[in-house]
Image 1 (tube, helix red, strand yellow):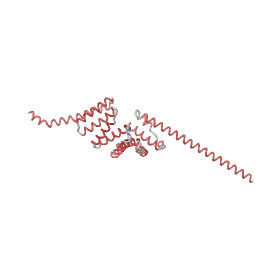
Image 2 (cartoon, one colour):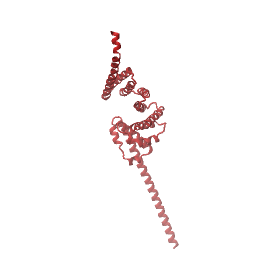
Image 3 (spheres, one colour):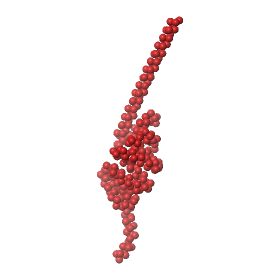
Image 4 (tube, one colour):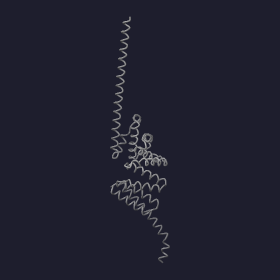
Length: 273
């Protein structure tokens, strides 16, 4: 009986060891599988982000389709991936001139994830500001855009983001009747424009400011410059817009000139007589 008991205990211990070893092997294999899956997921996500970023300027419509990811998949993203995805999605959506409302919660994630010493936070504030403007929440929009500008003071090379923020901020000031503030922002905007197209857009805005403040000479001068840059850029929509604005401005000031002449005609007639 004693011998049988010892053998039985030996077999039990051996089986327990084998079971523990199997459990360890299974656990190791499971961990390795999860690691490989995670690496594969990370690689696929990184590849997607790199591809969409490279296609963004020329093919924003295609990028928007590539970024059409199901919410369940987005939930598997890390905070870093989610923040980066938010900026790519907002950028593509904005370029396609679609509503930014679907990006709202994702942009909140990006704003929370990035710190003030990271340029990506300024980009998040740019699109959050445009989203707030879309919702007619002007005060919040202006606040977000100003926060973005403040962050970019530490990133002098981030010209494109700064140009977009200044453009949106100037337009918000103008639309809400703060014309002097808008004029100052438009002048700053022009300093960050290096292509003919961007210069034409900025000069159109500057001309509009001078028009609304009844500065006739500056209105016409800047609108003519806007047209010249539009022609140099060979941008048909900008050319048409600049010509249209110029014709309206000439017409507006011509009416004022005629009105002034009519008002002074009796005095002139007396002088001539």
